Length: 79
Image 1 (tube, rainbow, N blue to C red):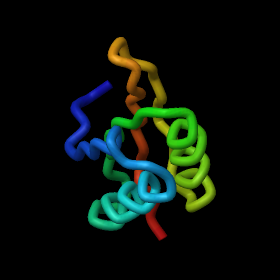
Image 2: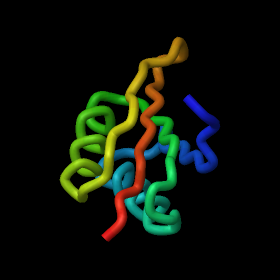
Image 3: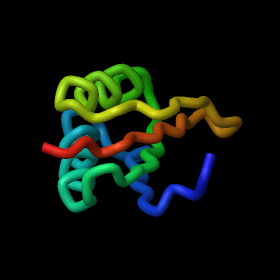
C-alpha cells in the first residue's frame, strides 16, 4: 500500500472520543484522501470502522500490530 499522508493516534482515547477525533480528522481531509488511525481496545476496534462506514467512508484495511494496537486505514468519501 502506498504511503498514507495523515495519521491519527487514538490509542489513549476512550469511546466515544475515539470516533469523535477520527471524524474531526476526516473532515479536515480532501475527498479521496487516506487516513491511518492507530487504535487500541475492543470498543474502538468495533466502533470506529463501523461509524466510518455508516458515514460513507471506505475501510481500506484493518490489521493488528505486534504491540497490541490496530492500524485502520480509511478513505474519505466525498459528499
